[in-house]
Amino acid sequence: MDAQELIAKYSPFIKRNLLILSLGALGMIFFTYGLIGLFLGNQSASEDIVFESSQEQDSQKDKTIFIDIEGAVVNPGLYKLSYDARIQDALVAAGGLSSEADREYIAKNINLATKLTDGGKIYIPIKGETESIKGIIGIKGGTADGAININTGSQTQLEELPGIGPVTAQKIISGRPYTSIDELLNKKIVGSKVYEQIKERISVY
Image 1 (cartoon, helix red, strand yellow):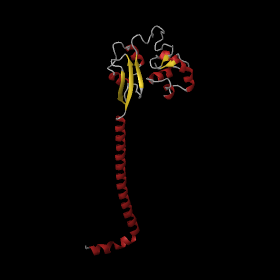
Image 2: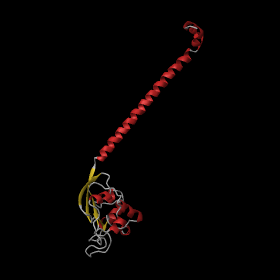
Image 3: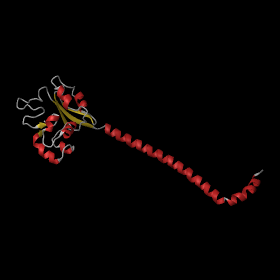
Image 4: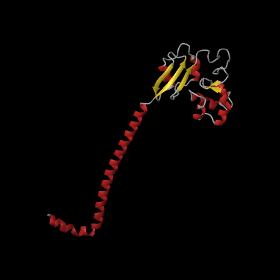
């Protein structure tokens, strides 16, 4: 059967269903273009996301901070560390704890996993220093004027401050180190009312 005979045979069918066949053909064309557009769009979006993520990570890696670490470490001083450094990293940079360090106190009160902030200060106490400072006081973690050192004060000592309970005392310890007492407000560890009650009774040195 040649082409003319085929056309003649199916011509009536095509005429009767011309509209349906035309719509079906258009539908297939739109469906095909839609699949192609969806595939290309997803591929482009995926590439953009990966690019931005990679760029952000590279930017973070370039950031550095400066930390002052003093007290019972082998090499006290100012150190340049990566932006995501922890207290443990600062101790390593300073050569580790010296033989005079109060290791028991450090184990109980200093969280080595605490993330550091630029311009921060860490003080590592010497044996006996946390119990008494030149015989003036005998309160662990205190200072010569009787104020509580929020960088070295124990959980029990912090709870003695007005408005400070066990939960808030633990938040203070977890938020160490502090470079000023104002950071208790800035880090939202205590409210303004409690801060006003304790600001004259606390210190960072």
